[in-house]
Image 1: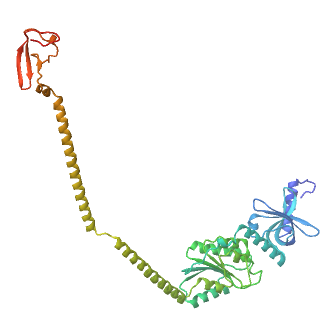
Image 2 (image 1 turned 180 degrees about the vertical axis):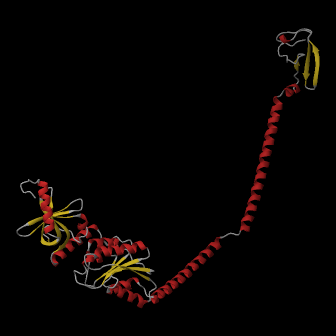
Length: 402
């Protein structure tokens, strides 16, 4: 390269970046976290430092999501990363692919902070926990295919001659790949739809060996599992965060098998007890039903009696109706006779019977005034027993015509 030709800032920065990345392969760096910031994008930005120097660092969302703890300022960590240059500012930085708390104390401190955070979210609340099925037909198991846990569980099932199916979903139970493996195995059992309860198990081991079962991804998967989960990790004295999130915690894998696998003899004994209870309940219910039937029967009335009562009631009503009708007819007849007599007394015939006469002209017009007739006019006179014709001889106003 011609050293007399000037470089642009971009060219120089890119050459430095290329040289830096080629000289430094992925490496481990130990230091203390400072200026930690979790961006809304899910990326982590921080500085890793010691007593003399510091390096800006970034951990992208995908790698950050795999951590079982939340980094914070002052935490001593071991980082696996790659050196590069952030071209926009010309700063070199460490791109972190993995992070571990440095030292047992730091790990326990990180786990305690995770526990408190998950507890605050309610993942360990008692009211969230589901009851185990009494007689499951299929039990799913998440554990190593070759570990002691599956052997202990299988032995208990076999010794008890338990009438159930054991469905193994194998998973890594130790190491960095274990959390993702455990979560995948748990999801596979849920998707299969066969299991009624799931045992998440692992044999004994050191504190570090059991860390996969305190990983946040595993804890959340156990807590949100739609099926009841029994956590049986390590020995009785060991406690992981999965134990707190599970619906039931068993001290050992063998104890977990005993919780979900009722022996055949125990099942038969339970069926006999249930049959006896059902028989007793049926007898009591039958006795009560008979008593109720007897009580109701005593209050029942024969239909024939009801018909007879109906007939008597009908006859009584008919008699009362006829009597009532006759009484009213007699009263109506008496009233009608009275009105007829009154009408007759007021009619023209009664007047004629008293000696009066009715005079009418030839055209039938009644004569009420002498001025209505003329001398010599023919008139008809009606008396009580008949009528006769007369001729007007003379007339006198205010008096009778002659």
